[in-house]
Image (cartoon, rainbow, N blue to C red):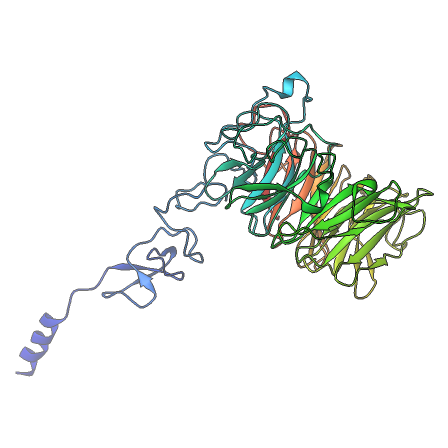
Length: 489
C-alpha cells in the first residue's frame, strides 16, 4: 500500500522546467542576455525576451527607432545611426536629410577652409547653432554670404535662424574674423542672439546683433543698440539661459545712453523685451572681448587700457560694480567665459600667472579664477602621463555650468597620444585633474587637420567645435570646415 502511494506521487511530479528568463533591470520588457534564470514561472524582475544591449537605460531596447545624432545604439542592432564615429562624434553642419554642406560659395571667394563655423550649444547639448556660407543646409536661406543655422541632434532637423521678418532672403552677413562667435543660444535652444550684416528686420536696420525667437518666428534688433543711422551695431553676442539678457560688444560712440562723448569700445547688456540696457565702458579703455553668465547676473570683460595693458574684469550687473582679476600688468588677457552663476571665470592670458606650475615660457594659457576666494588656477595642463609636453599657445576657453569642465584649443601635446602639430580641442576636469583630447579621428587617432572654436554645454556632457579635418566621421568629402559635436570623453 505504501509502495503504491509513493509510485502515485512520483507519477504526479511535474516534468523538469526548462524556460529561460532574462533579468530586466530597467523594466523595458527586454532582458539582459548575460543574466538569466531557469524556472517554470516568470520570476520577479525577469522577462521572457532577451537582447537588451543596455539594461540600465529604459530607452534602449531591441526594435526601438534609432535616434539621430546621439551616436547610441538605441535599437540594439550592434551599431548606432549611420555617420557616427567610434568616438561618438557627429557632424552638425549638415542638411536635415544628412547631406553635407556644399562648396558652391566657398570656392568663389570665401576661402578653402571656411564652410561652417562658430558653434553655440544648448544647455543639454541637443541643439547646436552655427554660421555657414554653404547654400544647401536649409530651404530659403540667403543665396549670398553667411547664414545662421540650428541643428537638432535628436530629430536631425536643420533650420535657418537669421530669417528676415519678411520671409524673403536677404544678402547674408560677411564672414567675420575667424574665431569670433556669430551666434549664441539660450539654455533651451529656442532663442538665439546672432550677428548679421543683412537687413533682417525688413530693411530698417543692419550690421549688428539681432534676437531671434524661434517658436514665435520673430527677429528683432537689440533695442538699445538701434541707432538713428540705420545700424544696429555690435558683435560677439552672448545670451543668458532664459534669454532675458543679451550681451554684445559695441562701439562706444554709438551707445546713445552713455552721456560722455568719446570714441571707444564697450559692452552692452540689453533685454529683448524692453528698451533698457546696461553699458560698461570708459573713455580711457576698450572692451576686447566679453561674455555673459547663464543666469544673466554677471559679465566678464577683457579691457584694454590706453597704454595697451589689459585686464579681466567681473561686472556684477545688479550692483553695477566691477572686480578686476588680480593679474600682472603685462598679462595681456585675450578672452573670458563664465560658469552659470558667474562664480568661476576662465580666461586666456599671456603670462605666467601661477608660477609653481606655469613655466612654459610665456605662451598664452587658460586660467580659472574663483570669485569667492580669489584663487587663480592654471587649467591648460597636460595629462599626468605626458612626460614631454610640447609648449604651444592655449586659447578659446569654455566652461560648464558648474565650473568643473573647461575646454580649450591648442596645437600642443596635452595628451600622450597626441602627434603632429594640428590644433586640437581638449577638455580639463578641474575636480579629478585630468585632461582629455576631444577632436580625435573616427578611429580614435590623430585628426588630419585643425580643430577649433570649442564650446561645452552647461551640463558638461557635450562639446561642439569646428574642424577642417576630414576623418572625424565617415564620408566627409566636402573639403571645408564643418561643425561637430562630441560627448565629453
